[in-house]
Amino acid sequence: MNYTAKMLREDALKDKVIVITGGGSGLGKSMTKYFMELGAKTAITSRDLEKLQATAKELEAETGGQCLAVQCDVRHYDEVEKMLQEVLSHYGKADVLLNNAAGNFISPTERLSANAFDTIIDIVLKGSKNCTLAFGKHWIDIKQESSAILNIVTTYAWTGSAYVVPSATAKAGVLAMTRSLAVEWAKYGIRSNAIAPGPFPTKGAWDRLLPGDLKEKFDLAKKVPLKRVGDHQELANLAAYLVSDFSAYVNGEVITIDGGEWLKGAGQFNLLEAIPEDMWDMLEAMIKAKKNKE
Image 1 (cartoon, rainbow, N blue to C red):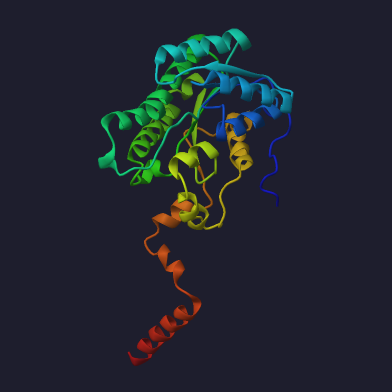
Image 2: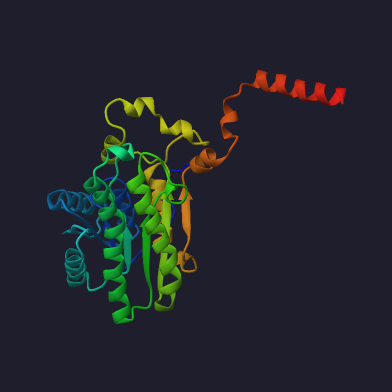
């Protein structure tokens, strides 16, 4: 089985207009490319317009599809509303919102300034809220029959994680919003789902999280039961399914795609994996000897 293969048929997203925040690079770019290959018209947003325009041009050349670059700082609601209007003016509609814009860095929490903490909260939680509210209000006002919101969260949204506390706090809020609106807005034809990815290497994010030689010292593949990190196409396949009509009955779901990483970390005795076979033989013999004595 080739896990890098493309999953859906070529017209799976035909005529859909999908807006991807943080779509200029990394996983956002990979998902956008696959959406375009499946027939979607896309709009990518971030603060760096020059980078967005280069990405849009590159993706259009590679796929033959349409990609609109729109500058937007999701932390500011007025900019989000302006971005939505630009998408509507260009394409005439918007069908899907993918909240992918994020920020993160590793640090002991006591070393963080209040501003550093706020920066992550503002991008991840406030940014997702701003986009969700703007798009949701629009869809409800025009009585659009079918719309979808897809949020990119993380597995530590429900477990928490040391050293990335602002991100964990913000992602937990996005997760709660996802599940809450799945119920509240379903009557308007708006589905709300999320993906919780494990380690999917991207140059920008990984350089910030694990600068210098830390990437070599902390091999994240070793934490994954499948003993590898994720391929971008795997995430793109899942995202495409969740924004497509094939998932019309999926609502309020958070799908983990991490090779079993968070479950390995959650199990109380999972560290016993490090015990070699000969030691297990010794332990088994000891247990049997004890039973025989009893």
